[in-house]
Image 1 (cartoon, rainbow, N blue to C red):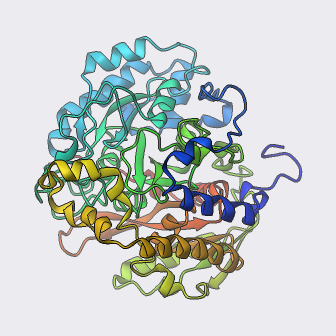
Image 2 (tube, rainbow, N blue to C red):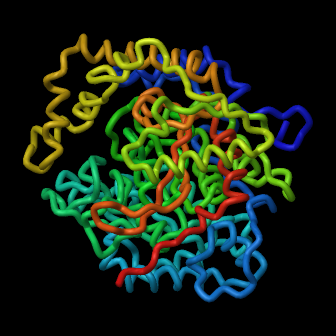
Length: 525
């Protein structure tokens, strides 16, 4: 049964809560099991050694686009695909337009850590099948955070630990983008081993700028996926990938006016991604609107024999259809949705943020299929289960980096305390953290999402730690009090396991009647 079929319900209503709880409990146990992971039963259709062909592009992936385009980098990915498929835009011209901007402006934005040359990108484009149904992302210039392995570009993780490292294979998510015809325009700069904003290796000197204040380094581009966020917001890429262990996709996304999805744990393979936490790492998609985010998620989602965390999950649904405004003339949500409000949601110290949030909720409430259920009651023992050390992951990264720590701790620079923490964490504390995580997940799913289908939240950590999906999108502009820059503000929405359809549905309905996702920053002075 597909979206549009009578009686179709989104995936978050069709997945057993108890099954997901058991699965995440297995992940927690497997984190310390080492070789046991290889023996996990595989439930992959077809040959387990293949990732399968890229999805063919249906009409739902395409969008109305202007016939006269002065600068094709202003188009969304869906609009670009529409024009390249119709023959009105040459994919090579699209690639050249992006490279022109990168060569002219990245010296200011500093979004990229490494990138291919113009000739290499054009040659890669020429080698792709000309049939856009076989290569749906043909000509699309994408960014991958610099912790995704790429065999043709450096993968340095923003750190001296991996300086000059060039893997001999690439991350599954990158493979899937390239198999769909996508071009990697560069590797997005990132915080040191996925910690904080991007900086010059081994120092506290900022590099990547926020696309909305490129001439002022004081305004942060967001968390560790800041290079990818800046590339997309500054039109140096049309969309891209980040990773989130603790807010590192939704943070930069909201800081730069993007629409991003951090899907349910295991939905996108982490194979070939420099790790931080076996149980908290997520690949997230970063785009300009809900449809583009859905397209990229559709491309990278799915089982991967190299990552047991992706196996045995329900098949990815039609994300792009979920992100298509419904029913057209008077957009509304496809599925009746209860939206809950986080405690203190309208009590931000910045009153402009409160105004934007109230306006956002008012717009949702005007949608006939949305019910605003009011302020949520947080689950039992919320403060205890989300506070340190139970709510963190400070001991997780150490096991991945023990050999690097033994070789030279100086390479970790400001991140050294985080990575030494695991050596000081007792076994009983680690076990308690895993137990608390499973208890928190149970209570979020049963108690929090017993009240609503979507939660407007100011906290991402509890949803990262329990593997639940998040989505962010812009809701307006504000003046930053420190720099005076005009900058975007956004919201974060959370949902039940495999609730990506629900989040995309709400976002698409909102974006169909508002224009904040179409805001673009000015170029640097």
